[in-house]
Image 1 (cartoon, one colour):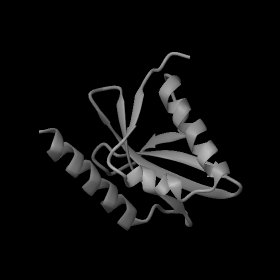
Image 2 (spheres, helix red, strand yellow):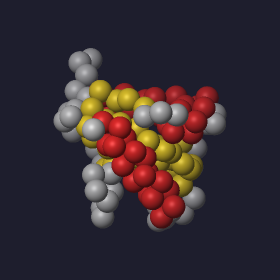
Image 3 (cartoon, helix red, strand yellow):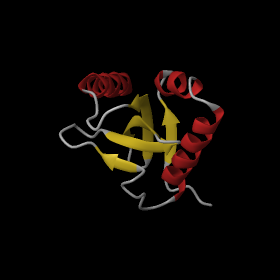
Image 4 (cartoon, one colour):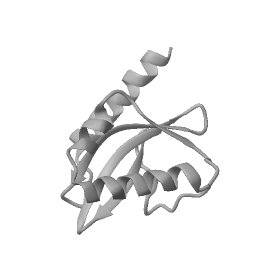
Length: 113
């Protein structure tokens, strides 16, 4: 399948999260990221803009009754940059995780200048 988007991890933020997951969860994360790479219109169930943030998106992964989120943002149109990830334990996304993601995004943008 032809890639619609390029997906990259920024520094070790995503990789540290990914490596702490079970093999099954890692496979589900990879499956979801592959959707992001290859499908023109990714369903909101898997990828959605985070309301009230400046260009922050979340990759949504569910496995075995657990919910995982990986924050991401766009650079140069079709480049998706992955930031931090976490296991979601309540309905609302923890503010501390959003703040961390926004700091990572700002760090990335400062390095791009």
